[in-house]
Amino acid sequence: MKTKTQTKILHEGEYMAEIEVELSYNDDEWSPYLSLEDAEKLDTVRLALRDNDLKTAAKFACIYHLTPVRV
Image 1 (cartoon, one colour):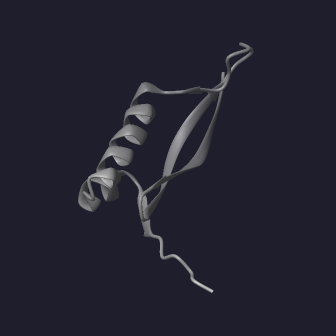
Image 2: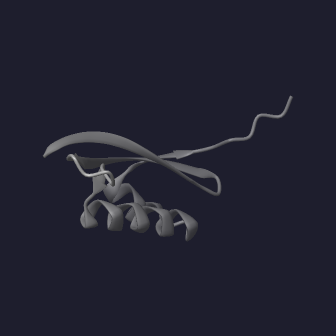
């Protein structure tokens, strides 16, 4: 089984988060797999951003504030 680190991006409201997760590859047709811990980390960050809890989200991800551009 091979593993690869990948950056996942979440967008929630006016925030965006970059989260490092590890994908596991094997010969199965359902490959790649995300570990339970990484799936929970994605859910934690998503819910924290939804609740504007930046302190919790920042424990697991790099957080960005998105500003709309009006032309």
